[in-house]
Image 1 (cartoon, one colour):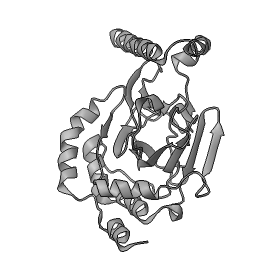
Image 2 (image 1 turned 135 degrees about the horizontal axis):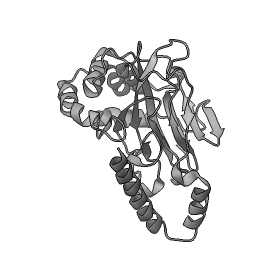
Image 3 (image 1 turned 90 degrees about the horizontal axis):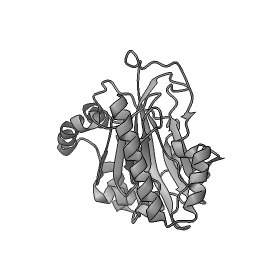
Length: 284
Protein backbone atom coordinates (compact mmCIF):
# COMPACT_ATOMS: atom_id res chain seq x y z
CA UNK A 1 0.00 0.00 0.00
CA UNK A 2 1.57 3.33 -1.00
CA UNK A 3 1.47 6.49 1.11
CA UNK A 4 -0.77 8.29 -1.39
CA UNK A 5 -3.47 5.66 -0.86
CA UNK A 6 -3.11 5.88 2.92
CA UNK A 7 -3.38 9.66 2.79
CA UNK A 8 -6.45 9.52 0.55
CA UNK A 9 -8.15 6.95 2.78
CA UNK A 10 -7.63 9.10 5.86
CA UNK A 11 -8.38 12.61 4.62
CA UNK A 12 -11.77 12.41 2.90
CA UNK A 13 -14.72 13.49 5.06
CA UNK A 14 -18.25 14.76 4.34
CA UNK A 15 -17.95 18.04 6.25
CA UNK A 16 -17.24 20.02 3.08
CA UNK A 17 -19.67 23.00 2.93
CA UNK A 18 -20.64 22.03 -0.62
CA UNK A 19 -22.64 19.11 0.76
CA UNK A 20 -24.71 21.44 2.96
CA UNK A 21 -25.48 23.60 -0.06
CA UNK A 22 -26.27 20.56 -2.20
CA UNK A 23 -28.70 19.28 0.45
CA UNK A 24 -30.51 22.63 0.68
CA UNK A 25 -30.85 22.82 -3.10
CA UNK A 26 -32.09 19.24 -3.42
CA UNK A 27 -34.70 18.77 -0.67
CA UNK A 28 -37.65 19.98 -2.72
CA UNK A 29 -36.69 17.89 -5.74
CA UNK A 30 -36.29 14.82 -3.54
CA UNK A 31 -39.73 15.23 -1.98
CA UNK A 32 -41.32 15.64 -5.43
CA UNK A 33 -39.72 12.47 -6.82
CA UNK A 34 -42.09 10.10 -8.62
CA UNK A 35 -43.31 7.47 -7.90
CA UNK A 36 -41.81 7.99 -4.42
CA UNK A 37 -39.24 10.44 -3.02
CA UNK A 38 -35.83 10.01 -4.61
CA UNK A 39 -32.95 11.83 -6.25
CA UNK A 40 -29.56 11.14 -7.77
CA UNK A 41 -26.35 13.16 -7.84
CA UNK A 42 -23.67 12.94 -10.50
CA UNK A 43 -19.95 13.32 -9.68
CA UNK A 44 -20.86 12.97 -6.02
CA UNK A 45 -17.44 12.12 -4.61
CA UNK A 46 -14.19 13.90 -5.37
CA UNK A 47 -12.84 12.31 -8.54
CA UNK A 48 -9.70 10.92 -6.90
CA UNK A 49 -11.72 9.24 -4.15
CA UNK A 50 -14.15 7.63 -6.61
CA UNK A 51 -11.23 6.43 -8.76
CA UNK A 52 -9.49 4.93 -5.73
CA UNK A 53 -12.62 3.07 -4.59
CA UNK A 54 -13.09 1.65 -8.08
CA UNK A 55 -9.43 0.57 -8.18
CA UNK A 56 -9.95 -1.34 -4.90
CA UNK A 57 -13.22 -2.96 -5.93
CA UNK A 58 -12.65 -6.75 -5.85
CA UNK A 59 -13.34 -8.84 -8.93
CA UNK A 60 -15.74 -11.80 -8.66
CA UNK A 61 -12.85 -14.23 -8.10
CA UNK A 62 -10.86 -12.01 -5.72
CA UNK A 63 -12.79 -12.59 -2.48
CA UNK A 64 -15.43 -14.88 -1.01
CA UNK A 65 -18.65 -13.17 -2.13
CA UNK A 66 -22.13 -14.14 -0.96
CA UNK A 67 -23.60 -15.48 -4.19
CA UNK A 68 -27.34 -14.93 -4.70
CA UNK A 69 -28.50 -17.11 -7.56
CA UNK A 70 -32.26 -17.45 -7.75
CA UNK A 71 -35.13 -16.41 -9.97
CA UNK A 72 -35.59 -13.04 -8.28
CA UNK A 73 -31.95 -12.04 -7.84
CA UNK A 74 -28.63 -13.00 -9.35
CA UNK A 75 -25.87 -10.95 -7.75
CA UNK A 76 -22.74 -10.97 -5.57
CA UNK A 77 -22.64 -9.23 -2.18
CA UNK A 78 -19.86 -8.62 0.35
CA UNK A 79 -20.66 -7.01 3.72
CA UNK A 80 -17.36 -7.96 5.39
CA UNK A 81 -15.45 -4.70 5.72
CA UNK A 82 -12.18 -6.55 6.33
CA UNK A 83 -12.34 -7.42 2.62
CA UNK A 84 -12.60 -3.72 1.62
CA UNK A 85 -9.59 -1.67 0.58
CA UNK A 86 -8.49 1.23 2.85
CA UNK A 87 -10.13 4.01 0.83
CA UNK A 88 -13.36 2.02 0.51
CA UNK A 89 -13.36 1.19 4.20
CA UNK A 90 -12.93 4.83 5.17
CA UNK A 91 -15.66 5.84 2.74
CA UNK A 92 -18.11 3.49 4.47
CA UNK A 93 -17.11 5.06 7.81
CA UNK A 94 -17.81 8.49 6.34
CA UNK A 95 -21.21 7.33 5.04
CA UNK A 96 -21.94 6.43 8.69
CA UNK A 97 -20.67 9.75 10.04
CA UNK A 98 -22.65 12.60 11.61
CA UNK A 99 -21.89 15.03 8.72
CA UNK A 100 -23.28 12.59 6.16
CA UNK A 101 -26.31 11.78 8.35
CA UNK A 102 -27.06 15.51 8.56
CA UNK A 103 -26.73 15.75 4.76
CA UNK A 104 -29.19 12.86 4.33
CA UNK A 105 -31.63 14.36 6.81
CA UNK A 106 -31.65 17.69 4.97
CA UNK A 107 -32.15 16.04 1.59
CA UNK A 108 -34.86 13.59 2.67
CA UNK A 109 -36.59 15.56 5.42
CA UNK A 110 -36.33 12.53 7.72
CA UNK A 111 -34.83 13.45 11.14
CA UNK A 112 -32.75 11.31 13.49
CA UNK A 113 -31.43 8.86 10.92
CA UNK A 114 -29.35 5.96 12.22
CA UNK A 115 -26.68 4.18 10.13
CA UNK A 116 -26.10 0.43 10.03
CA UNK A 117 -22.44 -0.48 10.54
CA UNK A 118 -23.49 -4.14 10.35
CA UNK A 119 -24.33 -3.57 6.66
CA UNK A 120 -27.36 -5.88 6.68
CA UNK A 121 -28.09 -6.35 2.97
CA UNK A 122 -25.56 -3.66 2.10
CA UNK A 123 -21.84 -3.44 1.39
CA UNK A 124 -20.31 -4.13 -2.00
CA UNK A 125 -22.72 -5.30 -4.70
CA UNK A 126 -21.59 -6.74 -8.02
CA UNK A 127 -23.61 -8.17 -10.88
CA UNK A 128 -22.25 -10.03 -13.88
CA UNK A 129 -23.70 -10.30 -17.36
CA UNK A 130 -27.10 -11.98 -17.13
CA UNK A 131 -27.61 -10.94 -13.50
CA UNK A 132 -30.67 -9.09 -12.28
CA UNK A 133 -32.69 -7.95 -9.28
CA UNK A 134 -36.46 -8.18 -9.75
CA UNK A 135 -38.76 -5.42 -8.55
CA UNK A 136 -39.14 -5.48 -4.78
CA UNK A 137 -39.89 -3.49 -1.65
CA UNK A 138 -37.16 -3.97 0.96
CA UNK A 139 -37.42 -5.60 4.36
CA UNK A 140 -38.64 -2.94 6.77
CA UNK A 141 -37.09 -3.96 10.12
CA UNK A 142 -33.45 -4.52 10.98
CA UNK A 143 -33.15 -8.14 12.08
CA UNK A 144 -30.95 -7.47 15.13
CA UNK A 145 -31.33 -3.76 15.95
CA UNK A 146 -35.13 -3.78 15.33
CA UNK A 147 -35.02 -0.32 13.80
CA UNK A 148 -37.22 0.85 10.93
CA UNK A 149 -35.62 1.03 7.50
CA UNK A 150 -36.17 4.43 5.87
CA UNK A 151 -33.51 5.32 3.29
CA UNK A 152 -31.37 3.50 0.71
CA UNK A 153 -28.29 4.97 -0.92
CA UNK A 154 -26.42 3.43 -3.86
CA UNK A 155 -23.09 4.67 -5.16
CA UNK A 156 -22.40 3.40 -8.67
CA UNK A 157 -18.87 2.72 -9.92
CA UNK A 158 -19.33 1.81 -13.57
CA UNK A 159 -17.08 3.57 -16.04
CA UNK A 160 -17.95 3.72 -19.73
CA UNK A 161 -21.38 2.24 -18.99
CA UNK A 162 -23.67 2.32 -22.03
CA UNK A 163 -27.46 2.42 -22.09
CA UNK A 164 -27.64 -0.81 -24.05
CA UNK A 165 -25.94 -2.64 -21.16
CA UNK A 166 -29.10 -2.12 -19.08
CA UNK A 167 -28.81 -2.28 -15.29
CA UNK A 168 -31.02 0.76 -14.76
CA UNK A 169 -32.36 1.25 -11.26
CA UNK A 170 -36.11 1.26 -11.98
CA UNK A 171 -38.56 2.92 -9.59
CA UNK A 172 -42.19 1.75 -9.87
CA UNK A 173 -45.49 2.79 -8.36
CA UNK A 174 -47.08 0.69 -5.60
CA UNK A 175 -49.31 -1.22 -8.05
CA UNK A 176 -46.39 -1.77 -10.47
CA UNK A 177 -48.42 -0.21 -13.25
CA UNK A 178 -45.78 2.29 -14.39
CA UNK A 179 -42.10 3.09 -13.99
CA UNK A 180 -41.70 6.58 -12.57
CA UNK A 181 -37.96 6.86 -13.11
CA UNK A 182 -34.96 4.92 -14.40
CA UNK A 183 -31.44 5.71 -13.19
CA UNK A 184 -28.47 4.51 -15.23
CA UNK A 185 -25.71 3.16 -12.91
CA UNK A 186 -22.87 5.32 -14.23
CA UNK A 187 -19.60 6.07 -12.50
CA UNK A 188 -19.72 8.23 -9.33
CA UNK A 189 -23.51 8.62 -9.39
CA UNK A 190 -25.25 8.48 -6.00
CA UNK A 191 -28.92 7.47 -5.83
CA UNK A 192 -31.00 8.11 -2.70
CA UNK A 193 -34.59 6.99 -2.17
CA UNK A 194 -37.17 6.49 0.54
CA UNK A 195 -38.04 2.90 1.45
CA UNK A 196 -41.55 1.86 2.45
CA UNK A 197 -43.66 -1.23 1.86
CA UNK A 198 -44.74 0.35 -1.45
CA UNK A 199 -41.41 1.59 -2.83
CA UNK A 200 -40.85 -1.02 -5.53
CA UNK A 201 -37.48 -0.85 -7.24
CA UNK A 202 -34.83 -3.02 -8.86
CA UNK A 203 -33.20 -3.75 -12.19
CA UNK A 204 -35.46 -6.54 -13.40
CA UNK A 205 -33.96 -7.21 -16.84
CA UNK A 206 -30.79 -9.32 -17.19
CA UNK A 207 -27.62 -7.30 -17.66
CA UNK A 208 -26.35 -7.09 -21.20
CA UNK A 209 -22.85 -5.78 -20.51
CA UNK A 210 -19.71 -7.40 -21.99
CA UNK A 211 -18.47 -10.52 -20.23
CA UNK A 212 -15.45 -8.68 -18.84
CA UNK A 213 -17.57 -5.95 -17.19
CA UNK A 214 -19.77 -6.00 -14.09
CA UNK A 215 -22.29 -3.61 -12.51
CA UNK A 216 -20.59 -2.36 -9.33
CA UNK A 217 -22.15 -0.42 -6.47
CA UNK A 218 -21.85 0.42 -2.79
CA UNK A 219 -25.13 0.01 -0.89
CA UNK A 220 -26.02 1.49 2.50
CA UNK A 221 -29.30 1.66 4.39
CA UNK A 222 -30.48 4.05 7.10
CA UNK A 223 -33.02 3.62 9.87
CA UNK A 224 -35.08 5.43 12.49
CA UNK A 225 -36.53 4.34 15.81
CA UNK A 226 -40.16 4.15 14.67
CA UNK A 227 -41.76 5.47 11.50
CA UNK A 228 -44.55 7.94 10.70
CA UNK A 229 -48.14 7.07 11.49
CA UNK A 230 -49.76 5.34 8.54
CA UNK A 231 -46.52 3.77 7.30
CA UNK A 232 -46.50 0.86 9.74
CA UNK A 233 -47.51 -2.23 7.73
CA UNK A 234 -46.14 -4.73 10.21
CA UNK A 235 -42.81 -6.51 9.93
CA UNK A 236 -42.05 -8.06 6.57
CA UNK A 237 -39.09 -9.39 4.61
CA UNK A 238 -38.36 -8.39 1.02
CA UNK A 239 -41.53 -8.28 -1.09
CA UNK A 240 -41.05 -9.13 -4.76
CA UNK A 241 -43.62 -8.05 -7.32
CA UNK A 242 -44.02 -8.63 -11.06
CA UNK A 243 -44.15 -5.91 -13.68
CA UNK A 244 -47.06 -5.85 -16.14
CA UNK A 245 -44.85 -7.44 -18.82
CA UNK A 246 -44.01 -10.36 -16.52
CA UNK A 247 -47.56 -11.72 -16.70
CA UNK A 248 -48.49 -14.35 -19.32
CA UNK A 249 -48.94 -11.54 -21.83
CA UNK A 250 -45.56 -10.27 -20.78
CA UNK A 251 -43.95 -13.60 -21.58
CA UNK A 252 -45.37 -13.40 -25.09
CA UNK A 253 -44.17 -9.77 -25.25
CA UNK A 254 -40.61 -10.79 -24.44
CA UNK A 255 -40.71 -13.59 -26.99
CA UNK A 256 -41.61 -10.99 -29.62
CA UNK A 257 -38.48 -9.03 -28.77
CA UNK A 258 -36.40 -11.78 -30.30
CA UNK A 259 -37.87 -11.01 -33.71
CA UNK A 260 -37.61 -7.21 -33.91
CA UNK A 261 -34.80 -4.65 -33.56
CA UNK A 262 -34.22 -3.54 -29.93
CA UNK A 263 -34.86 0.13 -30.79
CA UNK A 264 -38.47 -0.68 -31.72
CA UNK A 265 -39.17 -2.43 -28.42
CA UNK A 266 -37.51 0.31 -26.34
CA UNK A 267 -39.74 2.87 -28.06
CA UNK A 268 -42.89 0.80 -27.53
CA UNK A 269 -42.06 0.27 -23.88
CA UNK A 270 -41.55 4.01 -23.27
CA UNK A 271 -44.94 4.70 -24.86
CA UNK A 272 -46.56 2.04 -22.64
CA UNK A 273 -44.97 3.50 -19.50
CA UNK A 274 -46.21 7.00 -20.35
CA UNK A 275 -49.70 5.59 -21.00
CA UNK A 276 -49.77 3.81 -17.62
CA UNK A 277 -48.48 6.95 -15.88
CA UNK A 278 -51.21 9.16 -17.40
CA UNK A 279 -53.91 6.58 -16.65
CA UNK A 280 -52.93 6.37 -12.99
CA UNK A 281 -52.80 10.16 -12.68
CA UNK A 282 -56.29 10.51 -14.19
CA UNK A 283 -57.73 7.92 -11.82
CA UNK A 284 -56.01 9.63 -8.90
